[in-house]
Amino acid sequence: MHTKTFPNTIAELAAGLRAGEFTSVELTQHYLDRIQQLDSQYNSFITVTPELALQQAAAADTRLAAGDAPLLCGIPIAHKDLFCTAGIKTSCGSKMLDNFVPPYSATIVENYQRDGAVMLGKLNMDEFAMGSSNENSFYGPAKNPWDTERVPGGSSGGSAAAVAAQLAVATTASDTGGSIRQPASLCGLTGIKPTYGRASRYGMVAFASSLDQAGVITRSAEDAAIMLNTLASYDPKDSTSIDREVPDYTTDLGDDLNGLKIGVPKEYFEAGLDADTEKAVRNALAEYEKLGAELVEITLPHTHLAVPAYYVIAPAEASANLSRFDGVRYGYRCEDPQDLMDLYTRSRAEGFGQEVKQRIMVGAYALSAGYYDAYYKKAQQVRRLIKKDFVDAFEKVDVIMGPTCPNPAFKLGEKTADPVAMYLEDIYTISTNLAGLPGMSIPAGFSSGLPVGLQITGNYFDEAHMLNIAHRFQQVTDWHKQMPAEVQS
Image (tube, rainbow, N blue to C red; front, side):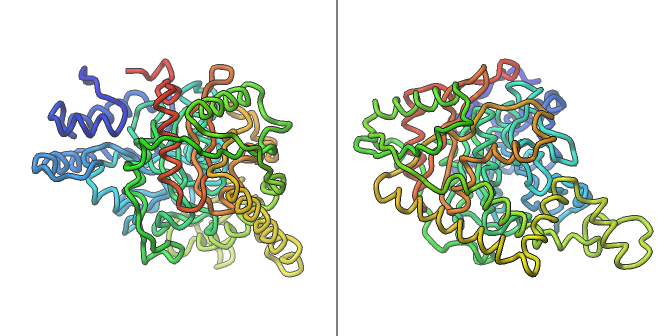
């Protein structure tokens, strides 16, 4: 491993590259060496792309030498393995796509390539993004660098583990019901899911199309702002993409917070919340008061319906989206099928894991004749009520804050036999997706020596303000600088 030490934020690395303290090739090699030596402990990568990474790094050095390179040029990142990468396996954490090499790249992958970011590889995840622990991956669970016997969260577990273990400076991720914010919380990182429609979903393997949104996991809010500048774009190839100008998310980071009204939902502090997690979140809120903000107790009365509504809507959309994996066009195909029906049934039975099959069955049932009105339609009506709760709250407050998760990282295997306990891990995060709002999690303390996240939910397209609010907190605290003892280099 190289003896040279490197900073661990995008902002510092970008400054070092421009000052000639190191090259992108040296920096990329440093991360590739760390992945090779350390990732066997964390299982955060599914595919590592060293040749491509070093080629991209050399090209970035040329751009940097010319003097007009974007801020991300030469910065080594990695992508969650549901973003298609031309010529590189995109598995979605599933046996079904273990042999799938897409002929094109996702729009957000192209955005990062355009800005000169270096791709180290593709990251582990729950199969088809279904899970809260990364234990549903065909490639085995990713592990939490704070304690490798614990989960890193899911479905973007590999994305969070890689940043926490310093195997990448930042990663892309996706969030359908909390899959960026929950892993960021459990791994002591900053994660942001922008407003639905802010980032392109073209080339992102779909789980639940009305809920999925791409985002990023980084160490700091400043880094998240830099990553979001590249991620966010209007894309005519994605019918859900919103044609709205993308601001520079870094420009408002230094604004003061005097007069900021923070809504604190009473529903987020009821039974089921770990005591030390609550204490850390309350302390973070007190810190915001010192920065000039005002805390306002609010109510989001339909919060308790978010999990049941989500677990009708998301599986229903998943059952429709995953019907394309039939063993015919691409992906896994069973051996020696007897006829077409045998090809379909065995390819799907052998190619999908247990959690995915469970959700397809639930979704197909909820959409079936005679049950559609009772389940899917009713869940969509509840979704409208949840959205109205937020709309009403944002008439009184600027942002909403509370815990990201009810508890710190739990042990591998602890909740696999109890799907309801696993689903309740997302109790505070799911509403944000149902309403299409932007949400983020930032490090706010510890419970039993494990990281705790503070969740910030903003109004539609309010990401710049949220990043400013997070950044100001990170200027007066150092929770985001804490690292697992094993990975400090």
